[in-house]
Length: 531
Image 1 (spheres, rainbow, N blue to C red):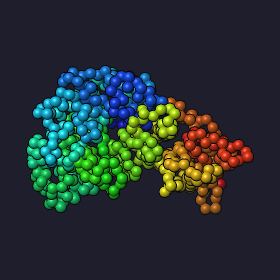
Image 2: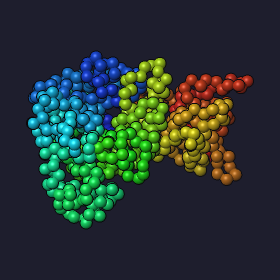
Image 3: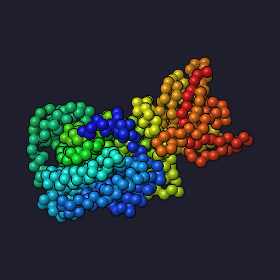
């Protein structure tokens, strides 16, 4: 696993301090030329992220076997550094989106040396089987060369982590039926897999192992009854063992945090069905990928992978956040939606689950005058402000607040004073704008940073005592620092009783004879007291 120097609690460490990834993943082709790198990294910088996630494609990195072209990688590192961004390279090696379209031509055109997966109908598909040793070793050599190059030229620590492969798994069948896979399936289950399954008592596969008699050794068919779940576990063992060889080769060259990302499905979360992208059975989503039911297998067979990271294209992300954070105490969302449904999930992940980072996908498509781009840019700004507070106190208590038609209000205690969050018309707006979102970071018994949009706060004291704001300071984020810009009082806080967090550009409160400005920085520190 990565050196302890790479971490401060659940966060990545940069210069010995916690670093929260307020990230942006660019499109798949946005790092495929030096011109594309400059254009896409410019877009990330304009939007206000602090980290860019960008692909390194194996076919472009090693166009001829043993000949490594580092020009695009070099350009990515320089482009990130010159724009003040951190970089997380995404290794598009043997698999990307559960297919092998980014492998070099010399791999694609030699299926005997680099065998493919075969489906139950006999079709050989464009997918390297994870049981092919020559494919594994070729990928490992290329990944090691990439990591070696980063170590050579990134002398200032621009690269803070690396993703190994992308959305690993098999589509079209629950299990690979190629000759090498069938041989592996009928061989004894690796001892570490059996230990992982027996110890992961909450996983569905554990129950199947118990029902089959709790055998300590045997083949997959002997330890479990035949099912898609067992096929998925078999594939997870294959993919994890393959990925471990790749990851270990890279770590020998450069010791930075390594992770794999997961394409989720309904059955990928253990504590209840949720609406997720993909199908319902392994093979309709990538079978064997690092989803929660087989997470223990991944952790047992790929110890050089520091954590598993879910891609989020879901409506209810809470159980996903909880499940992945519980595995190793670390949560990164390397992909999620960049539009309105995704923005509150960014605040949820960081505010309620202590995520080390979030990274909406495809943000380089946004323009400066695009409404969705403006909303994302504002969310980046707010989250960078939250990151500045976290950097100073990574152990502060945090909570996210997210609002919708179904949840228009919330309450949070700050000492003996209750903060009441509203989304209705206390300041003259008849129709609330959803989603509203924010994060509350405590800064003492009766003080907190409140950062967000689309809500109003009133206060309630203990029995027979009123509550009021002791102080309210509005901030701006400049670089990585919070700078106080306004001390709010009087009309702006309704004489210490109400504090608004409007969306940008709200301007003056309509319909009032006295012009009352609503400060719209969205970044405040409050202190409260009971009268």
